[in-house]
Image (cartoon, rainbow, N blue to C red; front, side, top):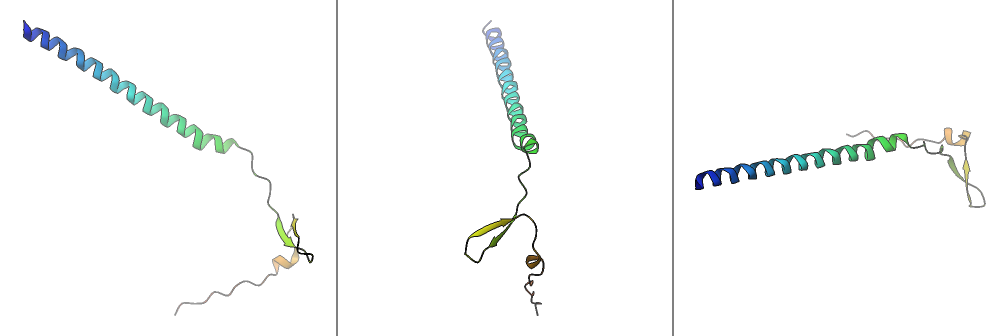
Length: 85
């Protein structure tokens, strides 16, 4: 008779432990789904930033934003790269 009591108590512990594992797994899956929406879907749906402009320093020393590329910036000399010997 005591063996039957121990066996039934052991089986009830297994059911409770199994249900806890299922709930923990469910919480983990829901958390990963929420993180996916937060970090992947929401940034993709945001508005695109405004187009950038070229900053030009005027003779007075004040910066100015120019939306079109100027001829002087197109003809700016490029730094020469040194070949490794």
